[in-house]
Image (cartoon, rainbow, N blue to C red):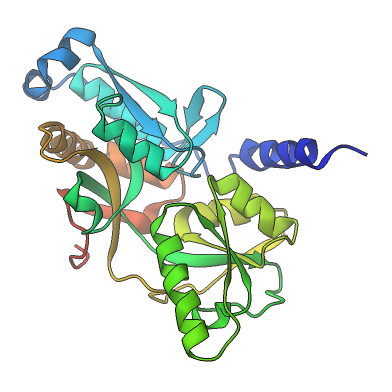
Length: 296
């Protein structure tokens, strides 16, 4: 019998191998926007490249296999590189804290994400928001534990991403359950999405509480073993924007915003988002530090 670690690797590999949501779409022809290129910091222009950091697979945005990344974010950064006139490379670190530290230290120029934009995070970073997101639960088919909201998570084993916004929300819910005299939530924090969803598939977790777009992808790849619940509810969040991350006050923030705006205006953004089944997460225009504002 194979070891548990080998079995997990095989299952994670199988999970990430599918591209059922990806569909061919006609992409507009892109050329370098010389004005945007000229606004890039001199060191980036001289290097001819930027490094975008991620914290592992976050399908369908970021699907990391070894040193290669595919997904909507990969397609969009490729397109951004074309209009900015530089190559955008990808690097992977373990967890969101390491991602933010890498950006703020200057080791990486930015993280395209999308990463959740919250006022508390805006104290140290600027966010170039390009999607709207929702947070729901992925559970085993048939929802045997009846998890449909935060209140029904009391006494259940809930997987979350370590250091993420969903972890903070479920921690607050854990305290609320205790105050209400209900069994506490058993919080299970993982460093990446595949490990979290695998815990639900293997019944080591009762639900995975995370962003709706990647959970929709994972459910589509789970051979009927999983389903989504809690759709259409706030689940502890108000308007939730996600986007790229740069150091606080970095001129790269406005450059990335204007680059994404150009991709929206010429149809590239819509084509890529639809290719990956993300029509419901599209914004009409990007913005900087939209966290906590009403959806556009």
